[in-house]
Image 1: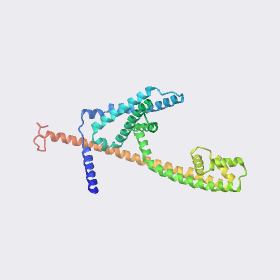
Image 2: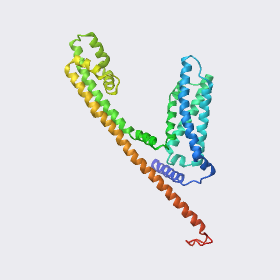
Image 3: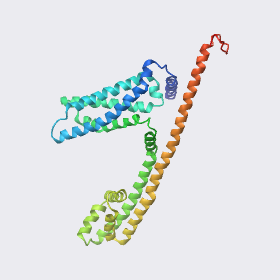
Image 4: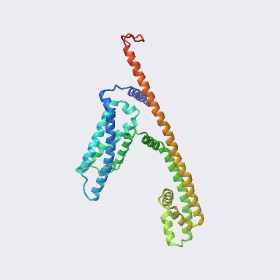
Length: 327
């Protein structure tokens, strides 16, 4: 029943994927869409759109600060870029067909589709809001994620190897960075609870200095405040000496523990985090070179196949050799 239906659907998808990956005929429209001038124009359009998003956000905020409405020119410009990228996406979908979803750049294509859909919905919601018929909550949520359009800049810099390597390294280190964040949170939590126990005993015995008491409450009043203080001490948010003095007032031992915390985080954990990024960058660089070599080898194989096809078509009598007349 359900298992056989699942296997049929899976086989259908595999068949469609294999059909989609077959070479497509390079029509005039395909050559136009994949030409260097076309790609260059839209790369420039992506950069201009990124600048436009910043300027539009600045103009919109300035207008609302003045209790005024933003100029209509920004809305017109937003619609223009929405139509421009929709046309570009439509042309790529028409020319690439199945490769649009199953090709090497399927992830970029899906992301571009999501951005274009967001732009269309944003434009419609803005028009409805101007007419007073839109849901303000939904429109606010849609506008709040406009910054995601800036991620499209990644497409325009793929041709620049150094920038591409930098972006790929950041993406590759993302998972490792999440584990680093979890480990640092655990370390911050451990020391925060340690200091909170000392602060609790300090107040239980009766605080003698109101000024020191106020400082302790501000920096170590609860777990969240203590973790924030400890993180600020290692990230430049505040001077760690100012965070240590209240703990010394609690007990000299906590001042010593705090100095060990600073040493452990700055010379231990921080170097580990840097090492994670360096390792990810190195591995990504190797993978990028392999990808470059692989693409060149694939292009060479495609060229050899085209040459073989040319000579096979010239062999009219199918003899396996070319006579002078056939040549």
